[in-house]
Length: 198
Ligand SMILES: Cc1cc2nc3c(=O)[nH]c(=O)nc-3n(C[C@H](O)[C@H](O)[C@H](O)COP(=O)(O)O)c2cc1C
Image 1 (tube, rainbow, N blue to C red):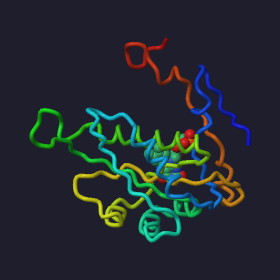
Image 2: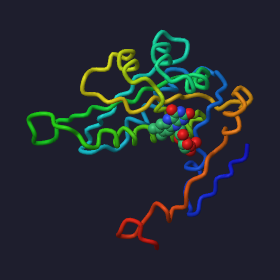
Image 3: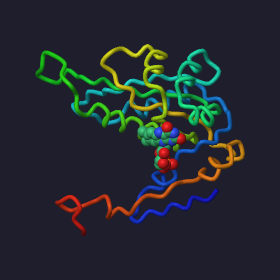
Image 4: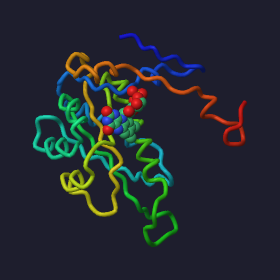
């Protein structure tokens, strides 16, 4: 399928070629292929280099898959059943900052975990895989499923798979199986003062 996305300013094609498919081929991913995506996530920047993220992964067909998969909302289970792996991205709410003796709340834990997600997604794109983040899960159920300690927030669950034929999806979802657009940059980027028109 051709990609209808147009960049208004010069950027590497990677940024518009990445998108979040729901149709996957059911191809399995090897542990080393998956580690390569998590390795990219590991190198994300974070405040004070705290690296608040942790990744709990499960490949389809392993014992770890079902408890994580079962915590997804029905809509997400419908399409992610063909994914090769699920990666739960969690982050520590508190951190021991330089010069402190006690952990204190880390205001950027979710922001930094978001950087890790983006790194994973772009490495997936570079490696011929696709990543699709999901906020649609039962947090309590997932917390139990992955034995998440107190003090960690669940940021997202990422489905990783090989992009497949949209025909595997139900009709309404199939119609949305294409790269989405973005609002103009001028609606998001302001010089000096919020909302200022350039
Ligand atoms: C944190 C986060 C949560 C999301 N949750 C879901 C979800 O539960 N189910 C789903 O189908 N897509 C979900 N998405 C996918 C977004 O809808 C998608 O990224 C957005 O529409 C932009 O499209 P693109 O990623 O194809 O560029 C989520 C994306 C992010 C980043």
